[in-house]
Length: 276
Image (cartoon, rainbow, N blue to C red):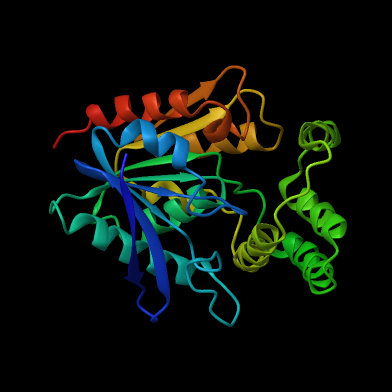
């Protein structure tokens, strides 16, 4: 499937890069922390036969701009609105907005702020519990580790944010074996994480604010994802009046990578039910 990258300019002049592939009604897939243009690639490949899929790299993640200053969800919401406007232009149709992890939190913020061009919302496990004052010390720890390029200390701080159980961390490390990450990619990801933590530290854990969302909404999760994510998702499902909540047995927070066809099928079925 052919793809091409294009620039989208946000309201403050930040240049974002978005990858486009396929043809049809527009779908925007928003990546989580540590991700980038590649994050949704496997899911996008399944969807691109029926949809025009947009994969933006969020601010702070190359090849999009890494602007100075502290990042906020307000700025990222403006970015995503610009991407949605660009994705709407070719067909004139509103977009199906899909986010994973931090990208799902951003999709919630964006739909709440300006739903006019959002035809539907699909959110996979937004870490709504990881926000506010309790994140601030972890942000400081991470920033200190980042400045001295201490990868182990950065990972430890991030585990405090995500609350990944020790046994899951160990299993991931074992799966990676002795492979060393590409240093350029690792640094790009580390910079992105730093900016995401800034936005999370400035955000709120208040789930009630999402009750104003009225677009058709699909909430997705893995049955094997650790607490407090399952409880958070149940609370979110009870808060958004239009939400349908699907939990996949045998899957975890990494389902977009481990079972992309499953994720794509769920999205395709959801999109097909929404009136034109």
